[in-house]
Amino acid sequence: MDLHARLSAVAVLCLLPLAPLTVRLAHLQVMQHNRIESKVEVEVLRTIEESIPRADIQDRRGRLLAKSVPYWSCFVGRSRLPVSRQALAGELARLLSMTEADVSRRLQGQDRERGIKNDLEPAELIALSQARLAGKRLTEHGVGVRLNYRRFYPNGDLGRSVLGLVGAEQNGLSGLELTFAERLKGRPRRLAYVRDGSGHAIYRSAESAAESPQPLRLTIDRDVQFHAEEVLRQADEQFHAKGGTIVVLDPDTSEVLAMAADPADPLRNVVVQDTYEPGSTFKMVTAAAALNESLVKESDTFFCENGTYEVSPGVFIHDHEPAGTLNLQGILEHSSNIGAAKVVERVGAMRFYRYSRAFGFDIKTGVSLPGETAGEMKPLAGLTRVVLAASSYGYGIGVSALQVANAYNAVAGGGLLSEPAVVCDDGEPGSAALEGQAFSFPAESPATPCRRPVRVRRVISEDTARTLSRMLESVVENGTGTSARIPGYRVAGKTGTARKVDPRTRKYSSNAYMASFVGFLPLSRPRWTILVVIDEPKGQYYGAQVAAPVFAQLGRRLLAMAGVPPDQPAALAVLRP
Image 1: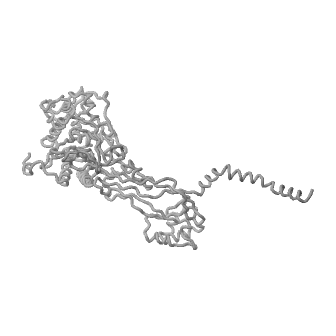
Image 2: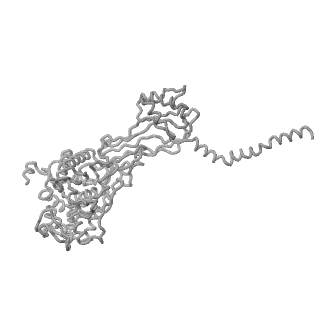
């Protein structure tokens, strides 16, 4: 074999072991390229969400109710920790005005990033950017700063049950912050990056496009909300009550002008999430059904059994004060349970059930708040004579405060039930805020509407609404609601007092009551529908004693604030009995 052949053979023998490596390398580079690249990206590629503030929440006049404010925080990445944690802890303690022990404790753990301090001062930010440790910038030791945002409510707890709560990650947890979480937060860009050998981030691309947060304008009026919360808090303190609620609606549009709860809980809105038995305020529904169906005339009378009525063998209904013969207006004025029970006998179970649901009970109102309850009513088949009688005066029925306020709002609005709204533009089709749009409202509309109202149905005729309003005015002038009077102004409304069920015995308590009053004013041109509910007042407990004065106090404030002229001269108002 000549020299050339021998050299070729040696070369082949030398290169032969590389053949499997070549095949393997080709397999990895070509066949497994995508899989390996993905695996490497999982190890070294990181994504970060761009920090952007949540959008503002404003009241109907554009005044700030919620805003995100920025702050800077300092952290240390796990993968960049230096050999000497003690040296880093000492340097950070000096720069951030902390103790070395506190910094060392925060550096412990297995988290990818360890938070060191929030709310950095400007001087601390500058110091961190200029400091060096072992001849390297602090970023090369894994130290970083991040821009964060926290939710700020400039009015304190004002309207917090409506606004809700935001968590540490700026995610909505309750209230409108939860309902409109996507709108308020927007969609921040997610940025992909890798770090070089010095720990610097090298951004590669944006994994997703950004969507800007959109501000939210509410129907709430900050001034009305303030006065509602203040008078409610004062009443709860005066009567040592467990709590209470106030709802204020616009009769023309059903916009919620105020929704107050005491105590305020940003995680729970009792106005829409809790139910209670409305008591005598529900007699309005019984009267409306009787009048609208022409089953009872204003001149018709009912014998109220002098205070005790055996509606079924062994089952008695009692009035708080004995009464003889009363017409429908007298039944409302005296708040006679027996009278209501006799009226509902003419109405019948079918009509009573239909009108109750037509007024919005046992159905969610559709307001843009999470956790709304539909309430609870007996099904038509369950309306026995006893149950029907009790239901006619508001027992055995579970309602929300918003449902009651909206039902009376329908009477104030001429018999039309509208969907209550708490947001001027909730993002639903046809719900756009009324800015620059041509939409017809009454010339004397009490306030500029901020959204197109959603009419649900006509519940009663305009004539019935006028008659019923006049009867409810008589309740305030001559009946149980006299403490709701406001000199110079016509007020219509109804008192309510209901025993609460004792959760231990599951029977009606003898010392726990819900006192309420609901009405609208001024009757000549209703501008506000107001519901006041006081939970378990101590001492006095009738709605006339507890809730009606709160209604009058808030009504006087609203009338003065809006500069509404009186219906009659003050001199004549003073002469009223």
